Every structure is written in structure tokens, then in C-alpha cells.
Length: 157
Image 1 (cartoon, rainbow, N blue to C red):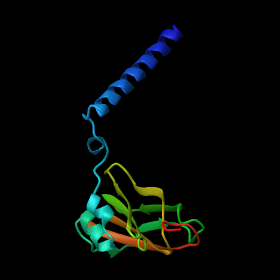
Image 2 (image 1 turned 180 degrees about the vertical axis):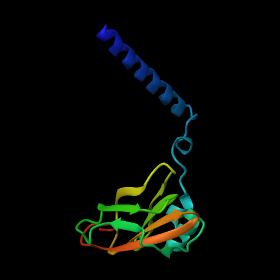
Image 3 (image 1 turned 30 degrees about the horizontal axis):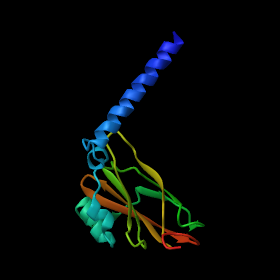
Image 4 (image 1 turned 90 degrees about the horizontal axis):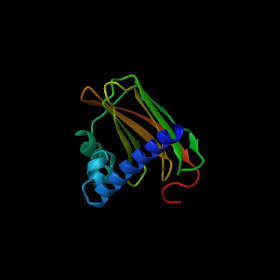
């Protein structure tokens, strides 16, 4: 009895994987259709106003004490800088920016009504500078920043 159940599970998984592989191979599922939308212009912008304008429709954000950024004061390795952003605002989206990177927009997260305003990730910083969190809430943009000093590594070293 156990063998039949395991065989059925194996067959279901194999058939599902095969069907997905055939669909991708035939061009029926392309990454653009399967993955989330990618705001290409925002992630290629060379400055913060250009990135925010392309991503959120505006580049004017007001300072807010309702946004908390947790990041090290000194990052020993710029290739993996842990950053956590939390907010008490009713966040629609959260963007993380490294001000001195050649391409400043690091990450953008869309937040649903059912989720808390909290994201955590590791970012890559080319050199010391501000890490900025921009939160969109109620159609307005709010921001907070924290200075992080990078000692080694980073985008270029």
C-alpha cells in the first residue's frame, strides 16, 4: 500500500515537471510571463530621481520617522550587506537604494494589504554611502536613510 502511494506521488511530480519543461521548451511559457514584472528603466537609472520616477511615478519623498532601517554602521564586506526595512505605514511598496552605487536602485517590493511593511535582504554596495528606504503609502512617498561604511569588497573591488 505504501509503495503504491509513493509511486503515485513520484508519477505526479514527474508528469508535472515534464509538462512544465515541454511548455518552456515550446516557448509557451517565457520568463516574462512566468516571473513578476520587472521595471527595467528604474533598475537601469543612473541616479536616484530617475529610478524613483520610473519606479513610483515621482521622485519627491518626504522624511519619515515611521520607517526603520537596520543595517551595519560598518560593513566588512560590501558584497553582502544585510539590510532590514520595517515601517508602521500602510505600505504599498518598499524600495531599497544604495546612493553611491553606479545603479542606485537595489530592490523593489510590492506589499499587499494583508502583509506587514517589512522586508529583509542582503545588498551589494560599491562604496560607503547612504542606504535609503522609500516607502509608498497612500499614494505618497516617504523615505529614511542610514549611512553605511564599506571597508572591503563591493561592486568594484
